Length: 87
Image (cartoon, rainbow, N blue to C red; front, side, top):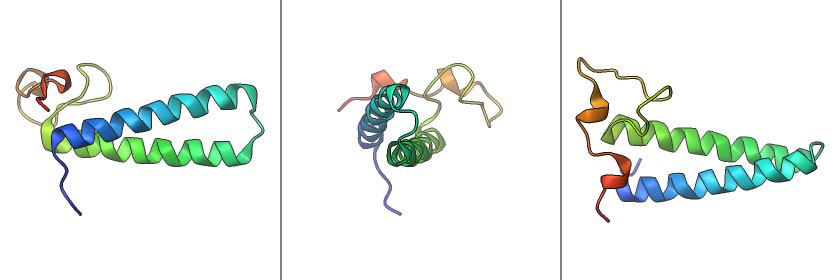
């Protein structure tokens, strides 16, 4: 599997988040659309894979709730924050 740099991963995450929000809004008004639901689930799975890859490689994306520290130190302050990544 190809390793992506931080900016590539963040770009992909932003694209997938946008798609997930749009599909969420569509499903709010079309809850029975099985094709849209399947696509939402696919986008969600891809998004979670990218977030896990980013956090495994570059550190936590959020400071609360979704990014537990698997190290002996609080990693949120030890790595560049996602908005500090230089493109």
